[in-house]
Length: 271
Image 1 (tube, one colour):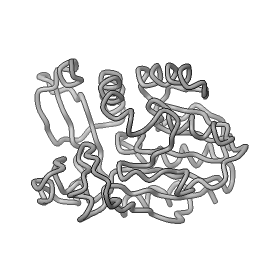
Image 2 (cartoon, one colour):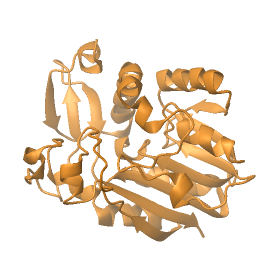
Image 3 (cartoon, helix red, strand yellow):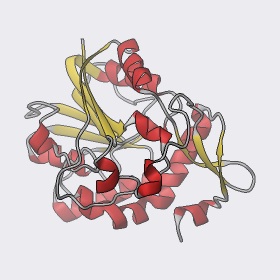
């Protein structure tokens, strides 16, 4: 049974969604979809690997986090935690956090099968259960940030738990993708809505309850959220689609990747 069937999804609307409703929907969605998601994408993300985005950019090649040897690293929205396990394999001391209990159960099973174990914490990204200045680095590869109603709060929380000078690097859908449908083919090259319309995308059941929520922030919004948290923005990486990469992953595809970016990676540090 798909997540849509399990949750009773019957339609799509655009309407405001507050933090608690968004968190409930995300927890329920990822709990219901965890097995299907990993069955479809597990090979793409790996068991012990750090893949930033569907374009296939790997931390081993990009080095966006810098030297993490001996560093205490927080992964926000870890899913099944392949990134955290990779960080452990290169000498870091990661902690993997996710809202979904089912995703964390898969993470625990993969820890057993790979022999690479990291601490797992179930919590939302808007309220991190850690002391101030307790991490050297924080990262997120499409985890949490696109799904929260108040991303500025996430930025503040990450800044709070980072030590001075600590890096925070997070990957999200490129904001311009909001204008297009989630179609990897030619129909996905046609603008469907305003880039400036920040009304959330919401899948609902028959009673109008949210079963899946995604929030949009413009590029300027993302920059302002970072700066308002007291973080220093050092770079915005827009990975190009690699020549010869034939993967189709949701809305990402060689066709669309040849025309415009699918991912934005924000590289910041605590001042």
